[in-house]
Length: 180
Image 1: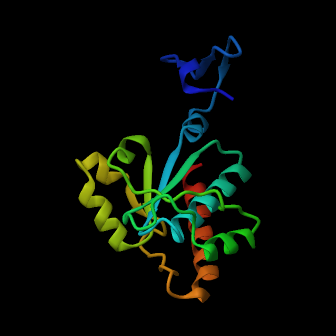
Image 2 (image 1 turned 90 degrees about the vertical axis):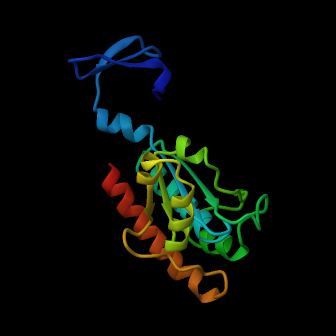
């Protein structure tokens, strides 16, 4: 694996120098940028939708050989420090994805600096995160996970967890396709 602190891009050349290997090599810079992708996924409480999306995106990224950093957060602080909703954990497990180790956290202003893109689940999340944006560069990072559609909150309706999983999975597949 090549880390950014031991890679030098040379001007006018389509090569990189890898200190770990000690050689110059041709390299696809699109792929290099994919290696550095950092994605944050946000919902209201960080117990249902965003932990599912984090787990799904991690699973799909790994499946596609992508070394992406993926995290999730909530806009509300009710569940900070708790694990995901048991229904989300069960739904993910039914698809061979383990999110049981997830710990809910609150969105931080510093997340704008840490992540390349911030995907939100619905228009309320979008409004809340955009309200925290310090400038246009922050705001440009924030997008709805499903483009112009929302992911409904399944918290009050048990039967929504599986359809929400499917929606998020499809959205994550489209994101990976668009970014690779």
